[in-house]
Length: 402
View 1: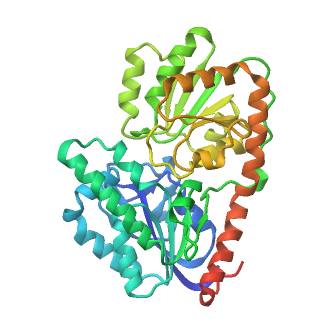
View 2: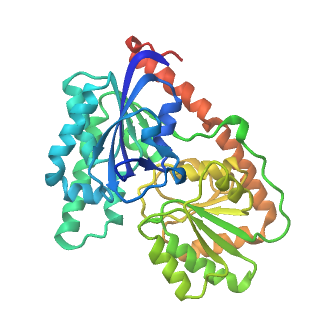
View 3: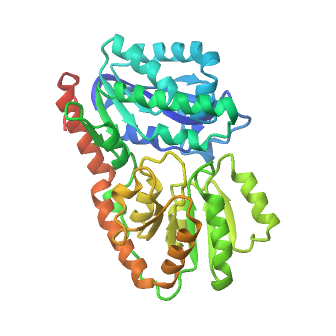
């Protein structure tokens, strides 16, 4: 930790606040804090007002961390932040000025419309920048619920934002989540470096379990949001349950589609083998859930994935992974070696591949072993060493040493 150094962080995450507590279950802030780059940290993030927060249910409670907060309006998603930008610009600029004034170096986690204003004001004041691109904005419009002219405007703005991000990433240290984004944002003059902002430790990696016979427990962990493919997965499991009556699917997470999906599964009488668990704390219960699972499934069909943390978590817990060829996923999952991938939204492929994994215990063990070998080089210790080396190389005057 550099004494006296002040780090300002802008996150495109969605936090919640009730006037007393500002909370989140995202690990982005905890990852940056654990790097121990600076003595003081300030944070700008979107905060959605809700009532009566119980801080015990969240991984991050800003008020308990000694962090100065600059709250932004509570947008639901990227599309909404674009639509309501004219009404939010004043608050964005106020937060950006406050954060930059309180910081010696800025970490901007994008894509997000407000991120441009933080970048622009930081550049004007010649502040050192870390730009972390964590998702493909071109995919975001596909998950939008807007229609007609609003949808057209969102698609146009998303493309414009992508071009703007290409320009932004010509300045500062550029970190990207996943191989797809590395390919999009790297040039000979301005390279981008892959980052997996996850808190997996080398000592916590578990060996794959050898399970005999058919798999019984399937698991999805993630946000219940448009483009995540959860409804498609439920449909596929309903089909497979006819041939595999012991099969069970557990869905862990929260989000705007949680209640609609819960209602649909209840109406279809799937409650005996499709379990919606809600948010599961990562400190203990989630690890237990992973260890009770035979196959981890991430069926995203249009969500703007970089490379999902949950795949790394599943690998670290010794699980075989089935995912889709979306975002940065096919750049790291080598089909047949450390996981299996199918085309996004392809019901038949998802069903048939899952059927094969359920029946073949040798294949499951092979994939789990491959996943564990992959995640060995992606632990927090490895990421931290790499980031500190980059910052020492690009900004030697800050005093950050490898």
